[in-house]
Length: 207
Image (tube, rainbow, N blue to C red; front, top):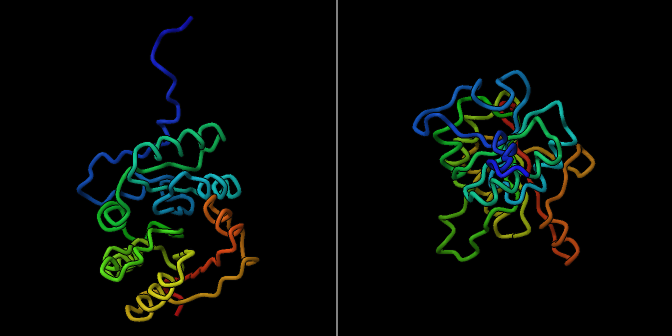
């Protein structure tokens, strides 16, 4: 019987920057700049991330999640699925896009069902703010995209207003049949409960 160290092969799927106080180079990120890289901000349990990475093996994916337990859970799922095109970064999303990621390194940014902070006095805590949108624009490659989903109508209207006022990215149409886009576990649950899902898509350098 082997009483040695436990097998933690999944740890290879955790991206640990050598320095948290500088922009990484593109070569330090998944795909090393050779293939398109997409990022899922606040990837949660990884249901969306695992699904889309499995469906699009020609692309690289980076999940960002601040809770260690969730990071390890996503990494274990990806390891069991045999995925070689996915890593997970344990870090806060705003810091990641503002201080860790280099310019023009991401082809798609996914922000799915973030905390809506419904009370008016808490709206300042919403992730979609002009500073974060400026960071998203900076990290997007030419013709890169920002995709957003929520079940909260008030947050959806907020996003449309912020994007209109900052004018950093161009609104794009988004029909469900336009491209493969898996649902999160929460999205499936909320649809079963009859909740409406709102989505918005924006592009860089499309004007």
